[in-house]
Length: 229
Image 1 (cartoon, rainbow, N blue to C red):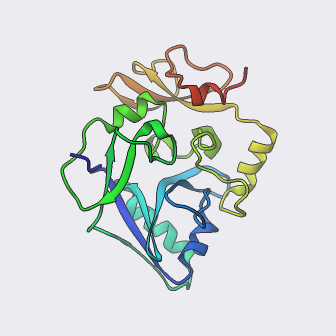
Image 2 (cartoon, helix red, strand yellow):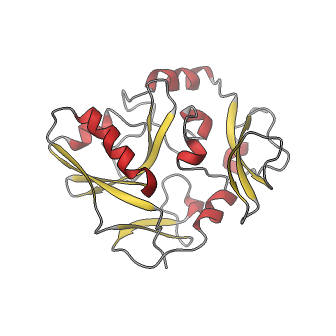
Image 3 (cartoon, rainbow, N blue to C red):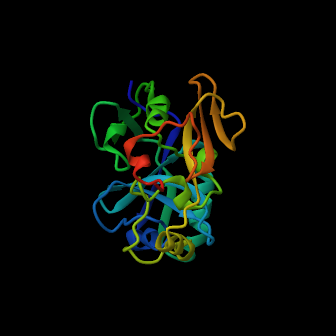
């Protein structure tokens, strides 16, 4: 019971596939994998977030199942005439266990790996939210990438070179002007800018002022260290 059934895998294959993705996404895919990365608008807002894995010469994108086709279409637009294949891989699935520390965003998130499809895991959503970590279009979509806490969760490499949305993202980082951030709060987020509500867990994801976190926000040490004193 380890499979994350709400995730899908896109296989990118062909000559120069790493160079192709390297010029698009926020993290460095030319080095060790997996990494967590974002594909942004030219203005630096989040379109998709995903993990990048390697499988021989191919790359595998571990993404939201509901967004896999939209992500594939977006990548196809950037592909132009490059001989790169972009297609779902149904032979593999994303797996997770709270026992381990291989998630590239935060070791406390647990162990993440790829393998044959199996039985569905339980508890991942609450485990992730209780650690203050947000993901997916419902929680991150249309926000500036640094407002999603991506820098603190290793979701951007400012030394890798160009990527879509780099100019505004790098400017925000240089000026340290991250005025708003995502927080996970206890309750339904009433009176706040709610991005996603999980009533079965008693939790919500909200977009709030970095200088004034919500009083009922879950505040892990990694997030506390990023906020202004």
